[in-house]
Length: 248
Length: 320
Ligand SMILES: Cc1cc2nc3c(=O)[nH]c(=O)nc-3n(C[C@H](O)[C@H](O)[C@H](O)COP(=O)(O)OP(=O)(O)OC[C@H]3O[C@@H](n4cnc5c(N)ncnc54)[C@H](O)[C@@H]3O)c2cc1C
Ligand SMILES: Cc1cc2nc3c(=O)[nH]c(=O)nc-3n(C[C@H](O)[C@H](O)[C@H](O)COP(=O)(O)OP(=O)(O)OC[C@H]3O[C@@H](n4cnc5c(N)ncnc54)[C@H](O)[C@@H]3O)c2cc1C
Image (cartoon, rainbow over all chains, first blue to last red; front, side, top):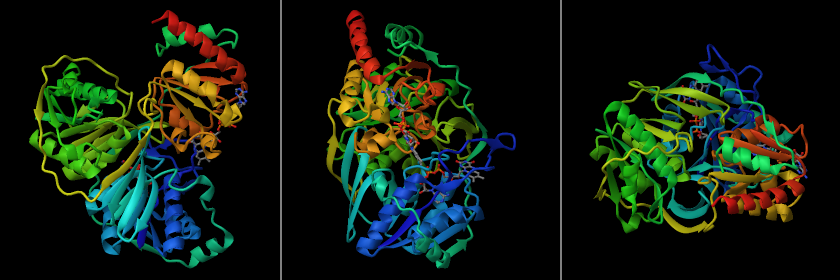
């Protein structure tokens, strides 16, 4: 089985979010970048398929050269090879189109992407990619087994879960639950050394027009101070929630 | 020309989120002299959409579509959009909405703006405000395609009544074979889900162990709320993964979020900040959550929560 894991290169979850150039761009100054957490769950599941079923793993990112350390980290975790599409990812559609070309050229059976990337929160690349390539799609995937060309996937639904039987080629939107937190892998020294020798191919992008553009960013208005209520006076809390906040 | 909305239902009954999507689309329609058409699957109470500005409902009655199937649902929405020559399709932000929206966008060759929180700032070109960086910022997004798909963020617009004469038509889309099928569904019945809840009661590591969740469930019960938890609580197996909220868990956009024994780490706050009113109960006055909350009680959860339950019961008894 050939697996493609899509890796989004995102600010670490503790990053302060600031904007530059008149609030038109995300300010990368002092920001640490990591593999998108949902993609880390996906990559870990891919490693299971590699180790248990002999699958091969390619990781891919659509991005400029500064995303390469993130791809190297994915190689150090155990992916076999990496592809970087050398372009500024201007919107989810643009990214999905670039990835569709990679999928068509590489004939991947299974594409693992994340449910959403924690920076732009689009939640769109996997669904667009599946639709563009005509593959089946399971979003919010929290369980996956593959036998031959049949896949059994579990997806989270509001208030529960659902088990789906489907066929390859398949795209999933991975998230927490697909693998246990404790099974996430941290690259070890050997992995890091081996990653240096693995192939990281840099390909030029297809000519595709983005469908959307962000014209400016803004931060939410500063919050007012918290109103403290004494633990001996919980009637006041109830009254505030009823009369002032009007939520009960 | 009309705006097409997808209205989600469960067991034949429309979900509340469907009325919010309808209200939102009706407001855009009113500004632009358009009408709103809804597409729904196996829904019995389609007439109620007239209360929120919908003038036509395309109701798909098809046994084969009683279970959610993303490809077939997306195909149906596409056919409805074509029939109505819709240039704008609006969906909500449930698990199924978010599954469908990008598929519909590609099929319709439309740009997709997810997590939209307010009415468009302009319609030509379409410019909408959406959340990014897990609620730490908004991005003004311009859609450059002729058609657009909007995913409306939950609880961002609210319900606005707009009495409209509403007709329901049976709609029979062309359905292809699907190679995906649902084998089983496992869903707690009679429990409010985090996605649908107006109030969420959430517990953190400060509660010491799973045996102490009785009071959290009781508080949720009294309030008709859903229960949630912080990440370590689900990692430790005290509560199921489905209850984990935050940046790497479920997003919460309820009217009221009550955090008990939760410190308020940045990743937790990012995921719950979209809630309108936040209450924190924590025995450490320095806990970061107090900076993000609207109301706070500095105190021991094991004393405060049982008292709060009693007082809420009294309050409910006197106010119903
Ligand atoms: C300089 C710059 C300008 C940008 N301008 C815009 C803009 O104007 N409008 C806009 O919408 N976005 C913009 N982006 C964000 C960028 O386009 C996003 O990577 C893209 O939109 C996908 O993000 P998303 O949140 O929609 O992804 P999601 O759909 O939430 O991502 C889900 C999954 O898809 C995969 N994926 C996502 N992105 C990539 C990628 N680049 N490479 C490989 N796999 C990926 C991952 O598996 C990820 O977990 C900009 C980014 C940069 C660096
Ligand atoms: C990549 C990444 C992603 C993450 N994503 C998430 C996420 O999505 N969601 C999330 O929640 N976390 C997330 N985290 C973890 C986050 O950083 C915190 O560790 C976590 O939120 C802390 O959980 P907590 O508040 O329950 O526990 P703690 O931080 O241990 O806080 C417990 C609180 O309980 C209080 N307390 C103790 N005893 C009592 C008492 N008797 N009465 C009242 N209060 C009491 C304490 O004062 C303290 O404030 C993430 C971390 C990383 C690195």
